[in-house]
Image (tube, rainbow, N blue to C red):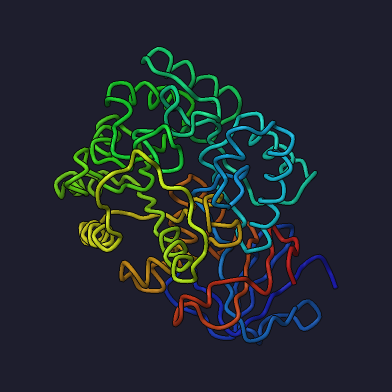
Length: 407
């Protein structure tokens, strides 16, 4: 055989990611996609038969924390350990993610010394892993959500300085904790952390080098501050009320603004799905945040997401991998939840897991689609995930930039 290969499958996703091309082959050479052709046009001596599988672009995962062990006691581990074990865990995580079909991944919170070292190791070929985009240490108030990663800053001046440090260290995106979070016991998910003016300091720092800001937003007032501050990505976007007795405080007008301005939303609903299934099995649950009081029923949160969908809000993938139950090969659970809990079509969910999130994280001109000229990132799944979204799980074949990873 020459260096050119054609990978033949029963079903190949079309360039628009809305239908299968039956019995087609994807031509690959020098790490790029050459063409997608009917199977009878693929050269016999250069064709690999993959069989009765569905070929998709490599998955694009928008929200990970690669040093985190996906265990119920993760906080106790990562808030105390040194960089060496964190580096080893992160190296294992990116390898597991790649073998699960994730060929591009965005990390949204880790120590700068850990995540940028892993990114460099992947890019130099020292370890296998997805293309890694990294935010480094999230900017957060003193002892507030994820303070242990080194991004503590309180005043507008300190916030801007911390953002600049992370940019200088090599960030591809900046992360701000616009509200508290569940994971950190000294934080309250119902609290706003920063006013819009302070968040804008981070946005302006990123803008000078052409990178976006993603905001962690559990609290409704944190969502408002992030939108008014100019962020382009809302993470979780849960609309928790500051009043614990109220539960949620959803603002449909603000949701419409999010849709109209094209702000991306990563709702991390697959994490909730995996947690629900774990409770049904009787698995041990993470320690509850002592500061989170009042109701926040999952079904009510899903109703909010359904309304946001109807308003045209754009969703991305992002399981929050590294949290309890969300191991680094479980990214498809986000697609399952989009279909089963929010009511999206299977093809819409598959677009979110590929081209939509690629567009959101800024790499959509080169990954996320099976089209000539794009990186030869290809994954094969047994069955038909456009008919049964749970078939999107544990690929039988993974190709990244033309190199076989699985198969």
